[in-house]
Length: 159
Image 1 (cartoon, one colour):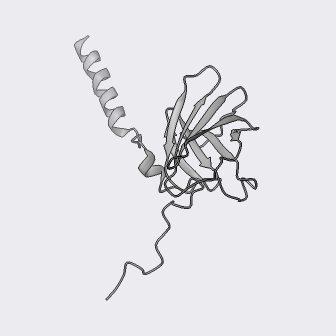
Image 2 (spheres, helix red, strand yellow):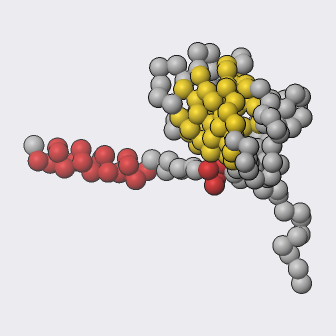
Image 3 (cartoon, helix red, strand yellow):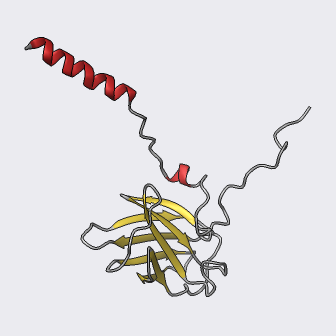
């Protein structure tokens, strides 16, 4: 009986060692990734939020606040029935934008007044149906303009 338990424990340990590692990712990692809609990606509990806001572009031509919700694998999460708010902290002009489901995995809010400033911070809170509220904080230039750019070929190479 002891040898069976030992073999079972040894097999479990071997499987654990052979399993592919689960790579954790955080906001710093997400900042290095290209967001599908040109915004900024952030962690929000079991979700990723992508904020696209304040500027004209393919995803938003009216300057509206858009938040796309996906799971950690990038699979779009249906936002029907979700509720949300974006709290914009910009200098002495804080404001709140109500976010409503806008089809598929998108939440949408009215364009902030007055527009974005370079020091803007945005706290997005979304409650998905049947789930607890999840939050993510975004830095200045929420449209993704501040995402890292790839270095030019040979830029780091010199003789």
